[in-house]
Length: 639
Image: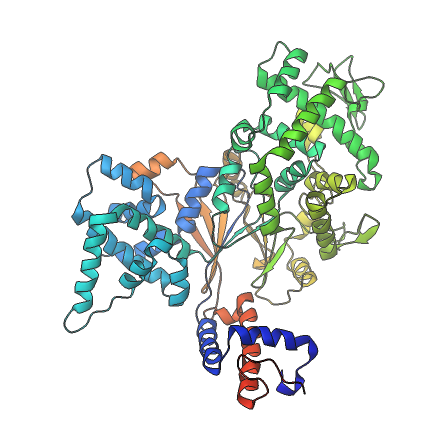
């Protein structure tokens, strides 16, 4: 931008920029700083998906940064320390407070231990901080110890060893006054430096019982984004007040034995539902009765929703009215199947989808509880603030489920809210209405209903299969429960299809990738996470314990650092107790997906693009100062 090109539209911005950098020296200093940052290696990105409420396994992989911490420790000490000491250091970094308590209980700590341990931790921190500016490292430090850590990380030897004496004096004082807190502060700094940004590619909720604990932890993370999954959108819809999403969320908690999430995590009591259910099913345990009652409620509410949304094209998912209640059976495709449930005390033969007065009372109470749960509302607000249907980041496209395709591999056209669209436009439309469902002051039933469609609709980008909820709940026949997938899951092995998807989202580089969650990779059946010649990577985390027998591992995570992309395959996590007592880590194997010929620097990233734009503005401001068109700390002259 030339100085002569100053316009009314950029004049105000330049005036604001001049207030921030009010002199030639200030502008020059910032230009030098930005140029230095642009030529540093890019920070490490960590990709995780399908956490499914498994807090302990997630927490461990977050703490070990998918093995990055262990790799750095081994790099430094594999030739000088035995493996058991290396693992002891790693465990201390992963769980500093807990490990310190255990070591104290075992009387394994003294002043000498603290000195050796702190020296080693400082050495590891120096390695991890080497690709960042000193300013960024300082900002990452815990505020109470920032000055001390900064001094210790950058102490240099001199001919009289003055710096060494200074360094030792600081450590002596730290050990005598605040050793444990300092160890914890250093461990937190190392984990923060090991990963510059965390991407959660969907499905924090359901199956495991601690989604709330995961979200508490994510809300403290320094840099994070979330690509919504079908299980997330379900809870987002429930928090917005969708009754059918509430019923589905409760069904999942009861079905997967994850009631703790509701009751302890979010303070949502199931007492009213349970008392009502025990009257209907007195011969069952309270939780079994509640599951039976909410299952019927779920299918009633789904039927009502499908009736008022014919554009969803889901009439074939209304099955309650097709049940032969006298014989506890249903006929599908000309075949009659027995139901595994014989009691339907609240279902009217005249209108199977109508709620009884008692059911209406239960649902009103549950809806009120979801809307009034402050913690749930706070967590869902966070998911909205940090999330979206997809994200384009540093040349990669991140989404949880699929880009719906037709039978020929083209983008499937859909019509919702009077708009016909496909590809990226469908994602954008879904994002818009998902936000309206939660944030609109005057919520529309159509937006709330759409949240349920996004959770289980056949053409939903978050689902991409014909969900068989009724069949899975009431039928034992495996064939009739089979859920047919969108053609996307056939075509995403083809490089040309993935390149077309990437181009649809504005990515044309041969170095771009699709990073996909949602479908567990069944390694026991020979499935591989790398597809379409490396253009698509499936990183379903496989954290859910129920999947381990099917997949053969505990899933994949992805690391993208300045050297390239690496998939990390993880074995199941045993327990935090074994990790602490026996220094057990999750065994992870690394597979290089792509190695960069030249190290990726900040200038080649999205952050680099923003800094380049800022640099251009600063260069213009400097020119204005030097040519007298703008006086520092004074308003612009008119041309």
